[in-house]
Image 1 (cartoon, rainbow, N blue to C red):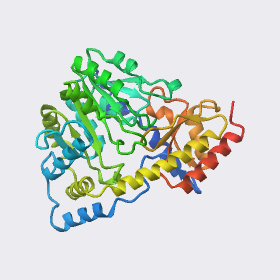
Image 2: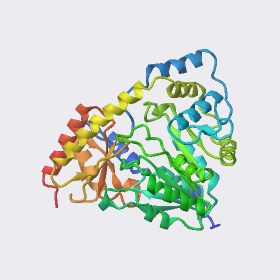
Image 3: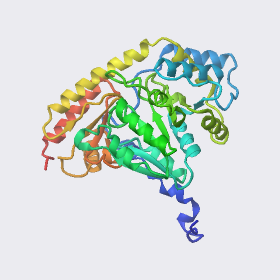
Image 4: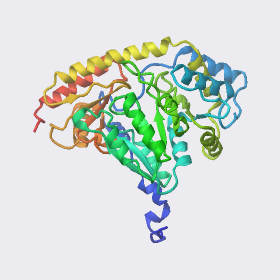
Length: 402
């Protein structure tokens, strides 16, 4: 333990772990956008522009009117846990026991936070292939664990590289994060590299955190779930699956996710939930139940719309000299290579915002290997995407190329 700074100093007022967490680059752009006037095109956030399906909203209203507004079990209502287990089984692989192997969380982000705190002791390592959503990196820091960023090769379009990930797994590794499809690159982990990573992690006594929040938004044939691969290898007890209704059901603000895995780990996660958020908002749990057990048409309609927007964005970027993008296989992001433009990716993002009115996220906000890129979210209507890409093209054509 290090001594605190002088009692009167600013640093003495907060913990080292809090100071060690970097502000999110995405939020930095959002805050800068709030200072701007005029018509801004927001392509920085991963939030569907669709409304939550009516039957889901109705379920929450009915629950609230019926008085289902009290605390629930820390693990969530039994029917929702069963619906999660059924959904995972329909998607291939083993069905977890809803009573002991599923816990409902306040979004996928809390599932990851609690999982890392449960399996990683101070000083142990959490391996994160990057570019990656920055939250798990910060969560590892908050757990006094050591985030180990492993850049995927930009030259290969950030395709999952099992060799690099396996090489980073060692005796101090507590967990390895596999996010498929990836945020921000949209790349999907095929079965072969997943098999290698699961095997190496289990052999070292490390868990695989399978973040599958964007799995329903995959634009080609989906590879097997990580838990299915692990089950085939007899290593299922080393996989923790994270899911959420946020993206596929346009329910980001409802804050309902889950963690599924072996009972000994999920039991501990459920226990420490009492000291974070206790339980998920009760009407929101009934809304999530309706989402998972109700009609699939709204999900398919959204996925089809995102697929159309994906093609539009890829065609537009392909027509702009000096920039490029590897086609995302899932999620709703285009990770555009702007390394040929003058300035850092953060400078380019700020120039695009201040001078052209388009808000994006700099690639460096997503960890090692993301530099020289901008993340553009196509979770926005085609008209706004057209306006935003017109302005982006104008910036590139305006002489910013080296």
